[in-house]
Length: 310
Image (cartoon, rainbow, N blue to C red; front, side):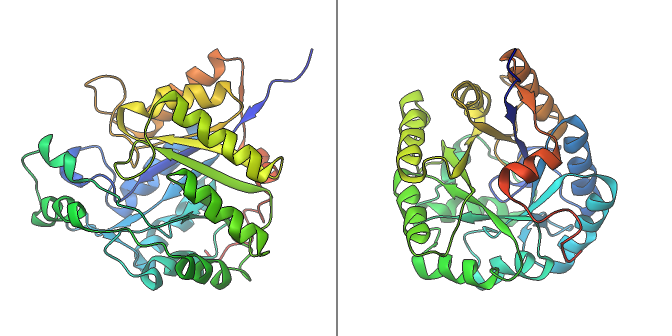
């Protein structure tokens, strides 16, 4: 009998997509982020993707000091792969966004592979009351802003982290982003195995139809062959359906409160671990095994738990 395939589960614990008022369960303080990450790894996540927030008002922040308040504790308490954002928020400069990955030298960091209309303003039709003034303003601002990730920006991040041994979760929100990644592969600035996170359901990027998922997979197959590891992120209510489709087609999955606040129709997820457990039940129902952190390290060619700066 052949062995079951191993699936990497990433959990995006907290991020800039959702604001604190939208769910009382979104981790904001360092201790909340730490506990959420530890819970996600305990539930089966091999990788935890982390942003930081101002503990007073929940505003997204790339202050390295805020990251230091939780990354060391997560490393001490788990064997999970720590993945730090270079996306931050679209109001930040690329220099600001880079600092946590540059200074802390994680095993893995996210990298957005192209500029886009990263539009969150439709959330204003669903949520009317906000705890902090910045939240509604931030969502409205996305009606007329571009999330900048130029070729110069991407090259700056790649070259700045080249000596850190940090590898990247390449976040691709549309087909063109896959071609952008192929451009950097062709130039020798990126080498496999590539960790390609295809993102579905953000207004301004590719949609959530099953054909969209298949199209991104076919394109990545053609561009990268056996030199990449495919994962998917479905936003909002599409989180689990897209995860199920991709897993059945040989992919890996990402869940977490950064990507969706829900754990079933109309039910807010109380923890990140709850989403990890839900997707784990889907994967195990497909007779797939969950990759351990060390198995994920091998699959992605990571430098190891002890070779970071925290």
